[in-house]
Image (cartoon, rainbow, N blue to C red; front, top):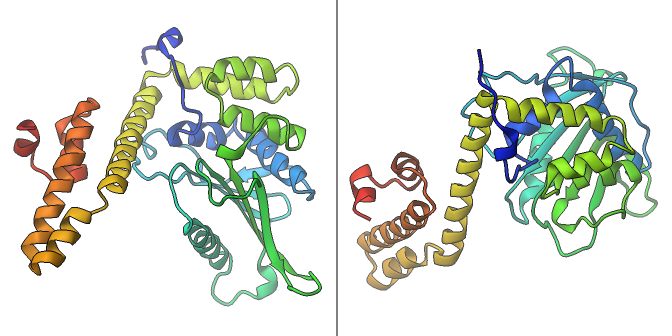
Length: 302
């Protein structure tokens, strides 16, 4: 029998953790209403038609979802009118991320037709992207992109619909009521307190609260949550170090000396610097080795 965790021990819970989001939105039989409400909150804020029901196409599975290291959450469902909705939560990115969004949308759209089927079999694919970084310098929190003619703004087709929500720009009560509630959850520093407050005004949040409680009481799911957090933390440290160092050591030495040895030495300096930062953060030698390319012996000497 699985042991329960003491929820009082949890000082901070990251509501954007991949493992938790998959459980919250794709646990078949208990997540459909939650997922539908979240999707409809996006539609309402964009002044679009809402949906009556959704069917989850990527159901949560404890075994299959273990040890996933990618930073992109894949939630996929289909609505009662055949529209496909894909949801991604991206914790890190840059100004080229729109191309990534479009590529992923195109990949899903191209899979709608089987060989020999007609184009009228195609249905809209709605891409919802929650970004935990600023994509641009505008103040837009929720942006919706579709295919329009530039001069008369005529809509070419409603089959492409891309929603981008930049969480870092979120300020309370600036969007539609329902989306405000959801973004308060996703940006909360105290998830339990936020849910307790919101549940009084939004009944579906009681189901969210139940799923959160089930999640944090599960030792197995919390173990996967912690693994994901350690991976994300380590990855963030490496990104920060790379921004600071650049690869400039290797490039500079390679250019100045005109030799491959210069580049290799610079890369080694960069890897050692990152490894030191990861080790100070308390991450184990195996994780550091896998993510820097250094041997366990080299790491132990640091």
